[in-house]
Length: 536
Image (tube, rainbow, N blue to C red; front, side, top):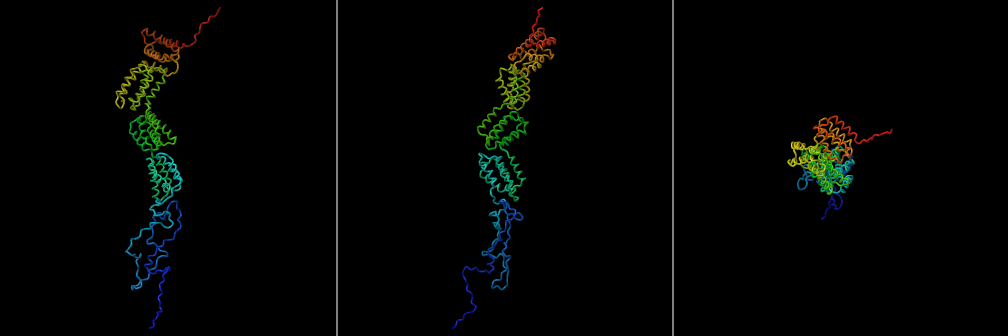
């Protein structure tokens, strides 16, 4: 039998690397989607920033489904065997295993984006390089010792963000933020507060899609940082605000000790806080409080001048010791007037000093003020007249009987009245005249004493030979060593005319006799002219 070979031979399949053209729709639908070609970077891109879209929004929405190269695909031909003609195919085609959920936007940017992966929701979430200027300032902080104060960090931020490169909310902020995290144990409470302010303004710029902080906002930020003060000092000064006037030296010393004892590197800020408060409350400060504040300023300036941010332990102890040595300034000032007087201290002198030194109502009449007078009296006991000692004893008695709040105004007035009866001089005019001699240095001349007698006994009160003469005698007895030879002669002349009047039972010296006495006193010290005889 003859075998017939068909003429329509089917071409055998060829295996090999040759690429076959897919014709089935399923093959076409599962091809890898090709993205658009890489575009050139858009203009206006800042260093370290992202490519903004036309609308400025991030992330950039992607079309779904993604467009294919060459435009839309034609509808495929029906499969062989279909008898219904061409039919629409679902798009996208169903995949094995059932329908798949719709894909979410791709988690990576278009080719050419610099933000890395994933695409941020805000432009400032993008990675930014550390700013060199900020790193330089932070390097300076690394070289410091001890806690970093708020003032130090604020100065570093001010300098590190001053280059106008548009990185205050990105590269510069990143540098300061990372440094603050690594050095959290060194940051004082004030420094942390400064960093919080910076973070607040940086976040505001980031939310607006900016990598820098606008100049107006930057100035506002620095101004807010400058107001950050020492929290310990603020609490101490708030305590002083609650105290009644006047603020004593002891109150001020306690406030400084509470507000500046923490080693937080804030001595300069603490001093500034106390000085600002004192300037605003000057009327409330006693002289002692001002003196204490001056001591604090002296020691603080000494410490900061050497580069220290806190008082050393030795400096601190020396300052507290000086605080304790501050007495009552008002009492000390009154006693300084007595120091200027060369002669004995009368009862009137002591009473006036107590009146001036204790009447400041600072509540220290029974403490520091009393100690000031007691110490002075102990050092000058040879100058005190019996009346002055009695005045001081009256003051001590009233002070010891006062309560813990000191002498009330009524008690103080009563004390002055009781002490006022111990007068060394009975005549006011003579006492006033003799007080001028008390402040005169050196020897008392005859002319000086004659002038004092003329003023003190010439008031026509009829006491030139009475209490006025008694006052002068008492003063002369206590100041005899200061009288020069001429002054002693003047004293003898006054005594002669006064005793003549007293022998007649009079307390005054007749005006004719008084004028005669003054003329005789004026001639004391003049050279004696001896009579000259001419030979006949």
